[in-house]
Image 1 (tube, one colour):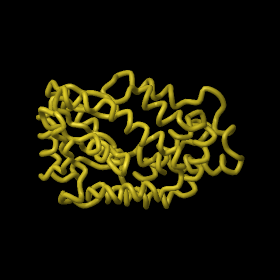
Image 2: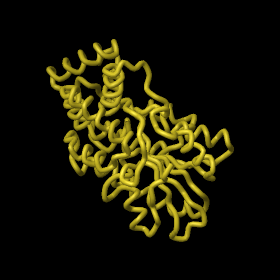
Image 3: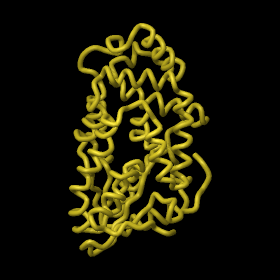
Length: 289
């Protein structure tokens, strides 16, 4: 489920920002001529649910560049993802016990009307992500996944002739999200998440609540509470990527004012970008709306 938080991250009441409850920060000092911004995103949240989103978007407009995990406007991205998420050899029958195969097959048939005979060549991590999103939408009576906040910022930048900069290439993200674990290990996580689907929904509900209240400590604690991945497996997805991004952000922010929009869990904890930027000498303060 930790992978879900980073992939889907990833419907509650409107909120009021405070110093201790914040997903929107400004970055200054340490040689920066202009202020940059850091915003945590979550892919299961409608922009209308984020208080003062129009004002946040207006601040984004003032920045000279929008910096995201990946440039989602890349026309080749979908093709690369489609190719990367298909197993080159074998299928789900080779990865699951007969009992688990029947379980997963039935769950997908009930949820999507398509089972492993149609989907069995897709990598388990992608199936897991699909399962979590579709199960969440069904449980909440939703027909469609909200438009990604990252994409909204990127489209807005394009419309206003601003730069859009990806911290990762499609290949970087594919390797981190889809190839960092063996197919067998991915299959184990898929089965666990299918068996614990109700627990998964409750975790996602908490994730949404903590996100909309800007509760970064709660998000970090929730991430640690999830036991579907080991600390070492999680390190590849979060800590290692944060360190790579920190090698790029200082130069990007020195060159121009940046609006950095990344998954909210990349802000949290000792290795999160907020703490790393502070350690690097920047002033990182909540944006008071």
